[in-house]
Image (tube, rainbow, N blue to C red; front, side, top):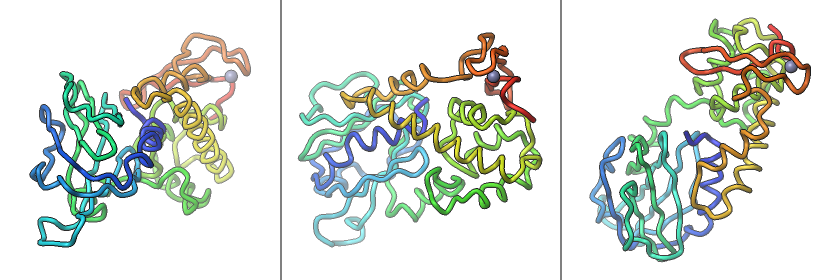
Length: 283
Ligand SMILES: [Zn+2]
């Protein structure tokens, strides 16, 4: 599943190349998770603005070239990669060759942005603004961006303190901080020396601070590796693998911890696998 670092690496792979391009054609394949929400033809002629990311969503502003009636007003596409999606931007007009899993093409004057998504949990949704429905509704429950300076250790600790759930579960929920998907949550908790079963309300302020720093460090590293493994801007699935090679607990159940030699364990928390080292990670 594409996680936040993969989505951000994807964004960086095409944002500058597509900015300023004019939409020439739109092709829809099989239905995605949600309908597009506008006539594909209404996007033709619009100009692509600066692509941004919020959580695992990308926002592609599409401004009308000239102001006109309401149906030609501002707006953009909110995109999500779902469980198995990848976005690729090719300089050539790739519309001629369409694969079975290619379900959305935005052909522009600078190249074609294509969503390939075998499981079709991904989405491309029109919204008149990022802070208006439907985009605002989809983004409403997202927690803070991990690198947002407003997310201070005090804010992070205050958000965790009222909760009785396990700290790992709270990270995965994404409503306090986004981006700590399963692999990154496991690795951040290992880095911070925190037992994933510890309840949020039992996490001290210094340990919350340590955890926030570890989440940031883990995501930064994943971004670095994702960038290096996405050189052809084609396959977002490779980046996860590159990070996994460096994982210290994730996927290592039964193996010796490289720090202390204890056996790495795998448990289930909220139906997700949690990997941790009982020697390094304390309650
Ligand atoms: Zn250990």
